[in-house]
Image (cartoon, rainbow, N blue to C red; front, side):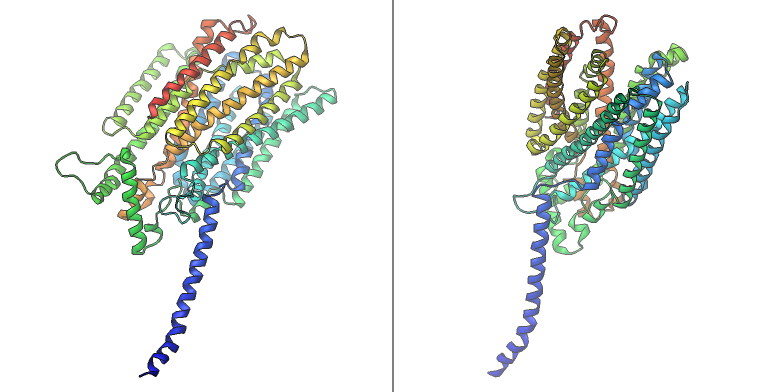
Length: 609
């Protein structure tokens, strides 16, 4: 009997020791994984380099062929002046269709997103390069290629934005995430703001490289005593731009841009798959259930199913109600929201194209189309908001529309600068280089200084401060109108112009980026829907496009507001009689008015509270 314990110990010790060693090994691996994930989510998260490269490529391909496109439009084709507004509206229209792109992309699937990005970039390369061979008087081809090029450019840009959301989910510590550590991890909102800053910086770097390359080409042409822009130069710029897009298509294909998030526990629009789905053990399900309840308690404003009657719902009943009732209304509401935004944009474009439509048909035809749009807006608005509660992302969309609708004199100032320095094209191109350099610096410093102010009151105060600074800085443009023409020294003209343009460009970027961050953050409602559906074990396939379509709609709200602002500028310009013929008289007054509108737009932040 005395030997039994010893024998038992001899037998049991190695048997117990093996599991201990295995457990220790697993714990070591777990700690290693935790540290590795913490480096991603708790250190300084960065976008993957292929995604940053494609954002930079987007900026390059938009800036590099700009003068070549203007040459084809104005010199080779000689498009009539009265068709230029129509051309601008047609070229800009594809940027307003991002909700449609997102909806159609959902049929491709997240696993094929890299293929779709590749196809779209190849289409962009073709549409850009073929523009070099538009014949003289090819007005219709200009319209056709402008629309096709706009679709092929804005669609992959949206898919890159959705991939950014995926990577923000992977890098942030969300409920159920393996990289979550107590009190040290960066939340999704901060990560999304940081990634948007990095995307903007990459895009601006691409524009900067394009400006420097174009400046080198023009300087070389001028050194050879040739015209800076001619048929040969325009063709070279357009073909080089198309070739660059082919390089981007190869990068998207080789590195599977857009689908890596699937291996990180995210779906097509970045919803993190909870642990209850990824791990089918009881402890994980219990942990997810606790997180679900905690999320509900933390976010009462998202609740649309709580009972105010005698019998209060339990947490489980509330969760089930949210998942099954609210999600159904969410899907129908999202469809109405998308249609509403698109129809609003069509209405605004219709108003902007009144003159060419009336000239081509009759005023009654234009009035009939406008009336149909108004009736459609009334019906969609009623169906969208009559039976549901006002959601936080509704407030975000309304704010983005109204904020972007504030009139801006930037377009007129660009024309004024062109006329002022028309005899010095090299300086204009150099000014473009400096502008892109300053904007790049601005987006980089935004990520370093302000990415932590990405949610709640902090984001509202940040938008307030940057809007006030940008509006006040815009008043310095008055010196461009009143003081610069009177200066006799060319050096002083250049110096003052560079200082003013640098200041306004820097602060304008600071003012714009919080709006993009707001659209990115407000598009995501992971704290209720995803966790509740996970607890019920529902299929996530039906909800994969919800956040994506919402993101596309909110980004489209920025374009919608810009269209409204452009329409508002028309009556202001006519009322002040600002034109080239009277040497830009009253342009300084227009700058005052636009700055005042910018300051007043601060009051719109109350919509988000």
